[in-house]
Image (cartoon, rainbow, N blue to C red):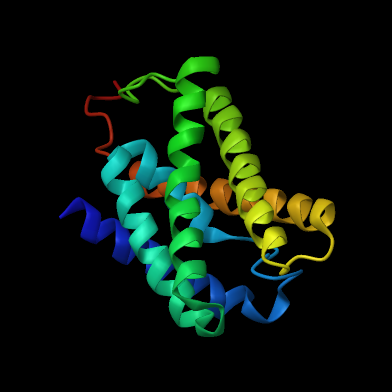
Length: 177
């Protein structure tokens, strides 16, 4: 169930991002803000490998529909990169950034560091793949814009997630007197 929900959420985030930013791509599949990056970040932090499998499945379907001319192999590998990059970033964060593996205690600074690592690693892996396929002309520039758009999308989704959590939290009870 977690895999299916993750796949649907990720696919829907790709659709929404294309709706908002599709006409303003910087280069092949590089948007100025990439909301799905934040969805990937949250899904892998909370749902771990099941979230990553859902991301890969949703990404494969999206890429096959969005770029049918590039074939099934392109869609499969791009989907795997989308699902695998946050898992690798999470593992590196546990090892080097002291991320609590159970995600019970996370400071804002730790979230900042993890999101920066995740955004950069995801952009690097995607751009290496796109460059190897002849889809990116200016690797360093596309990598930089993609890393920044991943980071912007991740921070935006994290802020929305935080606001949603705060709005559903019970206010503290007690009297003011």
